[in-house]
Image (cartoon, rainbow, N blue to C red; front, side, top):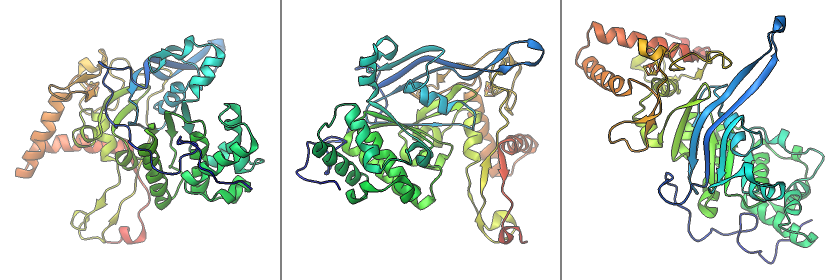
Length: 411
Ligand code: SF4
């Protein structure tokens, strides 16, 4: 049994009341202090099994040249289809895996240049929360033991009493009863286990937490509770999050900036409002169009209203042999000859600040869609119909509808 008093000094591992001032959740200003975390030209290739006929192993280009910065206290959402490289990028940020090329800088310091002791001390500031808390918690240890382990490992608490206080404080912070420190992971619900995972990440007083599909396995109501907890912890401790997810609704709720990945590269990045309200890359548009939308009764010919569940479907080209030029050109309805040979760089639109997209024709496409939308509103024409058809085909490439419910299927 753990004891809970007197209260230890405020820190993510021990505070039981809100910290005085939250850190600002803003975009990193690269002209001033170095960002909390920065990745420069990061590449990670994985060798596949040897090919037939002895032709050597292929290289899967999971992450293929990514530059990113994360400011203290902000939440950067990273979205994209399965296999786009977002989870690999998260692990590279924490150096859980080594990059094939490129650098990872923590407050301007290249982690690759540190000796083992310094790296361990700095790495403590970077933690991860996994999708499946059950598989990431040792089933043979009690929750108290799980939380005590990093405290002792990093010398944050040494005596049994100090460790007990810290463990109790951590459990309180994440909304669990300290009495439950003696329980094993299987005795908790999924949401409670994820709270334990959060507590374990907080134990070492991190500055940044990479959340890899951290709420994807939870029920919607539990998702909301865990996300609200994470946002509260961010306000209290000035944490930065890299929130990797395929659920755009969740990302829209929690993120301050969003990066969209496709085939190992970032194709669009910007403030949340810009990405969701004014997407510039056709791939981002397709992702947003695939988000489930309530279907009005009128739009379905008078059928009973309901929520149509849409699921992103992968048709990404082989990552060991990405297409030349723009990697999205094999699926893009706006493809032009230039797209097949010339790779677009991330570039801002005029006056768009840090909102950048990697598309040769982002401005023209935005204008075309705006013009088409107004023309359709005014009655439409053949050109608009053709564009609408192309967009529809693009959506169909991404979207698989789950079988309609009996109610939805009825006329
Ligand atoms: Fe589509 Fe070309 Fe833009 Fe790539 S560069 S997204 S293929 S229009």
